[in-house]
Image (tube, rainbow, N blue to C red; front, side):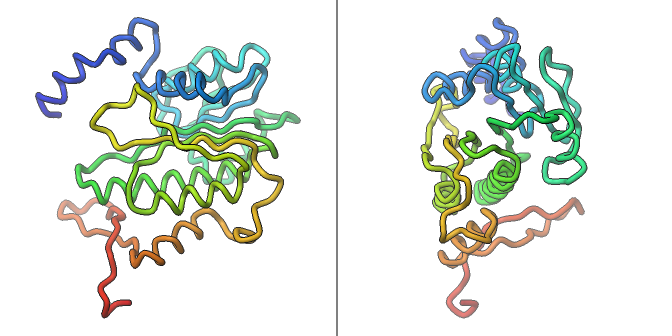
Length: 250
């Protein structure tokens, strides 16, 4: 952690505001600003927060859905209890985790999926952006699987290569898709949020039978870009990065 980052963090007004109001992370204000603009969560809604740790978005979701709503948070990391929410430790792409989610819902429908999920940043923009794109697309596919028609989906992504493919995949599954950059985001950040409303009963014709991940992969291929493992010297699991194909490879 750099000294500069630490100093900027201490001066961050959103961090100070979050602490004073009892929110676990400054990111809570990003969701609050999305909510103020788009009203993505209504009273009584059932909400799934994917990648919920440390719980800031879950706290806001509980406030907005009210006592008649249900908020479920899921993350690979253990999250301290959030009053009014049910928390699951698990991977939202795995059937065992989805079974737990459905069990908590019972006969209720899922109205909203939100996700502020982020990769562990490496400091290399192309690698970080590629991993973020993969995460956002994966969460989109999960949301499509669990949301009721007419439902809403919000996810974070980063501006850069491939984002147009993600936006198009979302537009094939929701009638209204907009990008939004909350003022609570850091000025230096390239993050943006996709706000996807009114899930369609079925995907549009061009996306029929395909996952969002397949669409985004095809979009990257059309740009002459492939995702490939990147060898790291310390023996840890390889990270995915973007690489443009040479003419010979094409």
